[in-house]
Amino acid sequence: MLNDRSSILSLLETRRSGRPRDLVAPGPDPAELRRILAAAMRTPDHGKLHPWRFVRVRGDQREAFAALLQRAYRIDNSNPGRLEIDAHERFAHQAPELIVALSSPTPDHKIPVWEQELSCGAACMNLCLAAHALGYAAGWVTGWAAYSDAVLAAFGKPPERIAGFIFLGTPGAPLEERLRPNPGEVVSDWPGLVTERS
Ligand SMILES: Cc1cc2nc3c(=O)[nH]c(=O)nc-3n(C[C@H](O)[C@H](O)[C@H](O)COP(=O)(O)O)c2cc1C
Image 1 (spheres, rainbow, N blue to C red):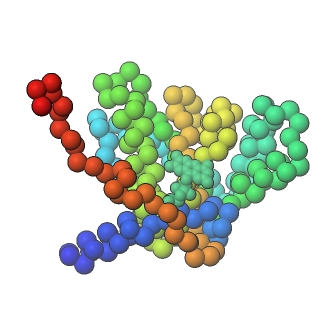
Image 2 (cartoon, protein in one colour):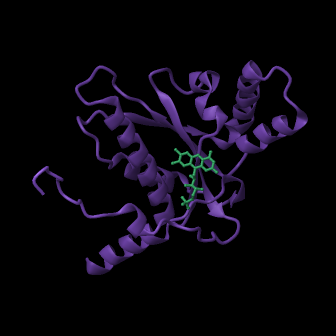
Image 3 (cartoon, rainbow, N blue to C red):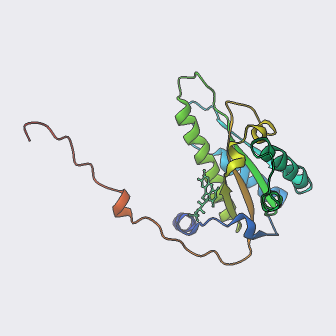
């Protein structure tokens, strides 16, 4: 058990995102993907509302996804350039697996939407960690498409929101470490109440 615990900790200590464009085959097989998604379900969830959903975009649907991005982009940009069109095409075809994560809150519930959105973020994080545990990397990105009403309409409807496009695969190159905040910068002891007498 101790070994299990220390290996879980080392997973947390070593997780890194993969850049979606650098993620190559193999991606998780169907059984692994089910495990990854099941791990995402084990997320703190005040009120047991499961305020999140995950939609898989299969490999054979990537061209349709690219077409959706092109159509959605043209709503706000009537005359996109070649570079933008190519970028959407590349975005849609990145990585062997693509999961669209949706925040799916219950409005007007005693559990504030903010807490439900926090739970969605935690579910996405569990998904990324489970992928890492199975030897894959995840790349969680948003960009304009996550805020496009037309893209959302293809996956859900308000008050749902796209929490991210989570690409999964094998890193094509070793993942380099990046600078992390020094815990001293973001962790502190509470100074206590400052009262008039003290
Ligand atoms: C909600 C959310 C949206 C993100 N969107 C983007 C994005 O659009 N583009 C990007 O390069 N990174 C994005 N990131 C950051 C990456 O997922 C990743 O955290 C970052 O590249 C740092 O890598 P690390 O996870 O290894 O620390 C986003 C992260 C979160 C939590």
